[in-house]
Image (tube, rainbow, N blue to C red; front, side, top):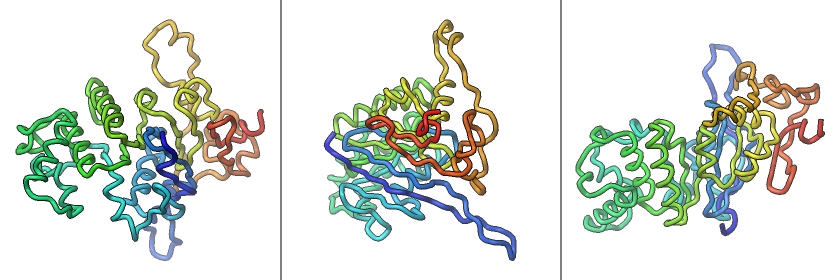
Length: 324
């Protein structure tokens, strides 16, 4: 690892919603004041419940969605909507659903070569063909697949095609937006191992978004936990699983199934009660307080800051800060 490649400062994303005639305008807060960094060559895992803002955050980093506030700094320079085209070669994304992210009317060769056309690179037809062949070989496919269409492949093969497309213009940073959630468990392991191998060969940096804590543990160097648009805990992967601070993280980890029946029976399961509050009207103070078993009056009055509790371990929780 060679220093910070990506720095995100106080990122926010609000989506306006339509209301009735004469009513005040409202917006949904999908990402709220998120700050983090990702070092060169590492994988930063981001986990949380469905709808917590993980995918929105990843797309804001790439400016597929324009952030409502905050900064995205890539390799020392701020990225914005005016200069994003110059960063497209260096930042790419692998989408969650391989069934909808590939154009069914395009051949595999055209799909993988599409970024070369979009970036208007001065390449001959032969050079473009050679690049596409190389990228397909990187992900375990061959030239026989180039003239076939996405519907002729399995889900795992389609995701390999998506990864090859992301690699075509040799990016440094890739957002992996739940790339294995739509795949069978046996295929998930193949894709994860391939991503790790590609990272080692090409020196890639990943933002790996998922809700499967076991998958994130396998691939990540550091992990961030999101809840209702807020980043509530960030630390090295091993430390998160051995010494979680935030109550929400503790509850998530207690839900991981253990294959050993003896250990599983002795393990204490923490039940997360209540429903996720509406992002239209999130709770005051700490957004997790309505479901937190340790909530006190201060939790409704003040928003906890994301403070460094131990070296490299950040947590946004009044309980941790005050030592209840």
